[in-house]
Length: 137
Image (cartoon, rainbow, N blue to C red):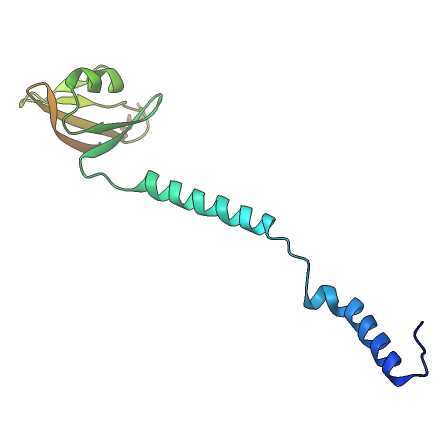
């Protein structure tokens, strides 16, 4: 048993009590699983965002009523029509125009040109809808 009157025992007791008091502050228990898991999830999320947002120069994202569709050069014409639906019109050059007109907003028209049954060129145009006001009688 420690003798409180003995200076070496008192120092040992004091060191032990300080270690108990400040041990958790100076040397906290290792809990690396939580932060490591959080960092891993954040890293995977950042990689997924980078991959999803990278630009492909031969691809165009088209908004359809059922979501986004990606059209790329060299895609077969049948697949493009299947993905985008019936074209609105055909240009004088023979390109197909796709879009989903809205009454009160501007509309993006996607023009897809084909060569030998495959996508050669993809262009988009924003068409504004002008409001027509009827004069009072």
